[in-house]
Image: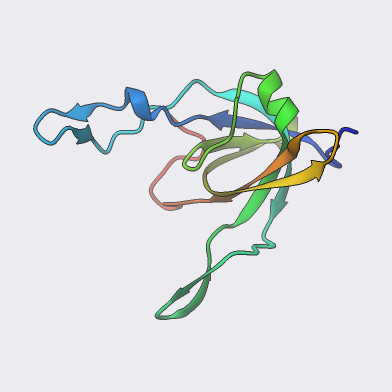
Length: 141
């Protein structure tokens, strides 16, 4: 049995390439420059809001994400994405006149839909958040 998305839309994804990040020669650690892969388009189902994760802080409970995108793992593999990982970036959601340029980062993952005949999770729910909404260009490089 294969799980299905109800309302799939194209999502542009940029993978974080940690191994290619420039290294500081003195401290032997990556600098604060993220190197990302070229954009890859994969279908996913978007849900804004409905955050299930809360973080306690001095001012009260805060949402950790602004929503999530549900991906079929088979669709990710079909376009060359082995897995979605934390700190990967979404740059656009949808197509045509309804396309929205975004600058969202994966802050958490939840594997779901474990059918007995599939050998593991068929879907991954990638929770996202806009880290610096006022400082960045939407979908820009």
